[in-house]
Image (cartoon, rainbow, N blue to C red):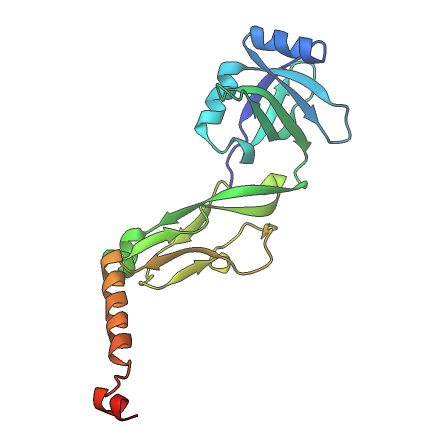
Length: 218
């Protein structure tokens, strides 16, 4: 489960519109907005370097933050959108949504795999093929997991891991209503190729031949 909620400091942005946003960027900040929660939207500025560091750390869109703005009560938020410069790919605007502990939200949660050395299929040369490196879940804001964990202990070549094999946090459920595949262990490519060749050989051996003499008499 997620640990301590990290703080994210911001300042109130004076003025709205494109002019105020451009001024914020000139001052080394990224303009943004905090909305939702039955409260008026709050225009903010976040220091560019702080935001860029958070983005590079990863999982920014699935992290719950405690936003601190001088003159306002702390509020839990989650980022819903980061606009970027089309050329430089740097953040130009960011949107946050206010949450309470019981708010239900859809988030993509990364999947981590452990105990590969305890999977006989991998030890014998099998290949772990990851179908879904992350899974979209409906979760409560107060119980956002950092990751979903798949234990590979005991898995053999040909075994498949589905969402039902993963223990989800209380109250969380997948957005897809079926038992979809997360990963599987496949045979080594060399072994698969040999099997294919053997199958082809068997098929050719089963094709009946026509006796040339019988064909002529007919």
